[in-house]
Length: 410
Image (cartoon, rainbow, N blue to C red; front, side):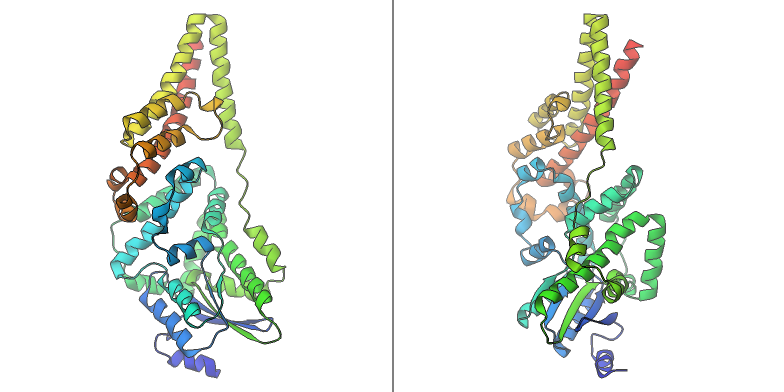
């Protein structure tokens, strides 16, 4: 046993902690596996910084998440109009759901989620050493995970996210600490991969390779002839995979980072399916006019009433303002002729304009959406809910209109 390993075992705060040491290209990477909501993980980071000297500190954060930790109040400056217009409502909602789940755990144990990452960031500043942000952008990871699974599996993914927010059962802190034990982690991830290998690849395996490449990339920029020691603070679930990639990865790190940072292209079949359905319906309406003007007018009326009506019902379900309901009714029937912002986006922008979110809505957002009622009382959450329900209502209305029109003709 080396002197360093002996010191680790005898240092308070480090006993039993999952630590790997990897030597690569003249660099020693001291990789600490942590639980993202754990007091002992924070203590382990602080203990390593107090007992060993490092030339750089790397943390499992991307730039956007790091910025969120540096400025926790930054989300209050969110421009809802821009979010909706740029088609990022889904990504914002998913990020809120994930952060709310972490907050629920934090509220149970009195520690902020990601506190061990914050300890690493603070340590870099206190010791005046470079901070390396090595994780892939969370938005890219979520998009790659979303596109990696089938259409039906996405419903399970959404259900799991929602259940993680509204589940009221407390989680034993001992169970969180057990997640640091390598054998339990491997068996848990093995079961996860069996159920959804593409999802495991996007959420875990790809990020292991990405973070290893980022470490090599940063080391290549910083290292000269002198050896370097880097403290790497990551979630325990990435410990084995990251270290394995650090040992065997031979590809150019910049090329690997670029490849894994790409947002996957959207599948084209849903778009073409939607276009085909709408074209079929309009062909049916045209045929109705060909047979009889009154029949064509009735088919066109059905299209307006079904699409506009179901979209308006979505807005009503979201308890939107009457103007937002009217906007949904008007926008839905003309959706095929108006590429760009969906009907839910138009209704949501009207909602955000009529009922402008207050500072208090942003301040209480994460607390409010933990409860079902909060989605209707918080103005930010209600705007996002309005977006999704109006979009859903428009889709239902299109299919309902098509079925009704075709039945009336044949």
